[in-house]
Amino acid sequence: MTMYEHPEIVSWNVTNACNLHCAHCYLDAGVVRKGELSTEECYRVIDEMSELGTEMVIITGGEPLLRRDLLAIVSRTRKQGIMTVMGSNGTLLSDGIAGTLKEAGLQGVAISLDSLQAEKHDEFRGINGCWESAIAGMRCCLKQGLPVIVQTTLTSWNYQEVPTLIEFAQDLGATAFNLYYLVCTGRGEQLADISPQQYEESMASLVDAQALHPSIMVRAKCAPQVARIARQRGLPVAGGGCPAGTRYLRIDPDGQVTPCPYLPLVAGSVRETSLRDIWERSIIFQQLRSHGLAGRCGVCNYREICTGCRARAFALTGDYLGEDPWCLYQSVAASYASSPQITWTAEAQTTLQKVPAFVRTRVKLAVEGYARDRGHSVVTADLMTEVRSFIGGKIHRTH
Image 1 (cartoon, rainbow, N blue to C red):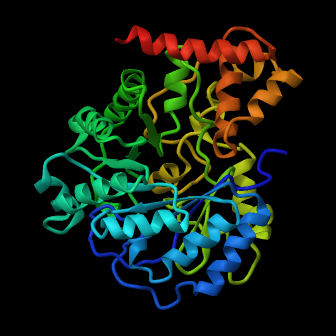
Image 2 (image 1 turned 180 degrees about the horizontal axis):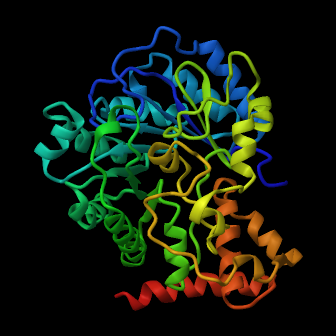
């Protein structure tokens, strides 16, 4: 299967309706849009995702629990063999709802939590009492055996709180902690972001946090430079640059397709064109895959594993192929292109195929990055075992 053959992950805003009023909402959610996709249209889109080879769909909003046919949508995606998770503010969840969602086939719920201080979370999310409801929603999911992901949007006012939020997520029993780096678009267009220096420091601390908390996945979102920091610290690369338009797309409530939720460039509409045609023929997607990046991103020796955030480049410069202004790294003369070309033995390829499909590309990039850093040109099964041992050793030395 060639690169870009299919979107591994689809983020799907199934409704604009929301019971909160979050300060940073890229969708400016609140009320139902008049032209939201019908149930039958959703079924057709799900079938097209399946035909295209999508491995994971993230059902989000607005607040997806406000969509009356949510259970039918979840059931259809699971029937088509697509891993299905939901992004939610958590306030509408109960034991009964969590149990019903699990029975329908939902495999995880990502719930937003921006502070351990209730009043700060409530102010950011726009409704008093939503912190307490979100925590209760997390506990309901866990009680029903539905995995929970804790999601935090990084801002200047909660920057110092991230380590304790990760500890909270681990103690709660969450599967993962996702830290979203703010892209100032939608309702959040006027928000003050953290400084570039804080951005760099935060990514470094997140790389360290994964070693300190091995029982939970700690991930950076909208921060592809974390791959460069991991490489600099001698750790296998956990990601492969900005996925927008290369292995990821987003569908909005009206059926418009964009490269990601934070890059408001419409590549097409599923009401007018098949998802496959949009994915394969959209000029926007083709340009994102060309790696014809400008500025520092275009000449960076880490460009193959990073690429910079395309949404942030667009929000701050108006050019989605321009350099990411929030990155402090200055490229050195050594070119990544001069590194050895990597081949895989048949045994190593067989081992790779055992990795879940929706993370297989990232694992492949991580192993190849480890091999390049050590001058290897061939990935063997023994080398893959070495990578796993290397990660374990890094974790062990942090304790």
